[in-house]
Image (cartoon, rainbow, N blue to C red; front, side, top):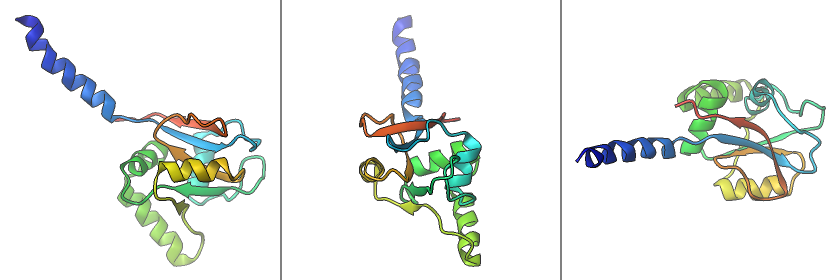
Length: 143
């Protein structure tokens, strides 16, 4: 009887764990970058820098504005909500200072683009299986 009472609690706990997802910042394996700090990633994805720490030009790529993975990525990266990130980019674009990372339709497009472009940097909600990609930063989901 006691086991039956614990089962729903166990399932609820597992469901909550499965909903959480880390974010994996990725580059092409030909990119000399081996690791990235969170501050360096913020600088790239928030338009404060257009180059990797070694000086090479960086092209940042994003997922669609309504993507739950995008929301989790920016929350883990900057501590800001999607609305705050969108407002930040609206201000920068209005002043003509810089443009946001180019959005891609989904994670498959992200994998394909980054594995064919050594200057690209993007992110996924899972560790990439593709040998043409390298993870340079893992952002833990703080939920």
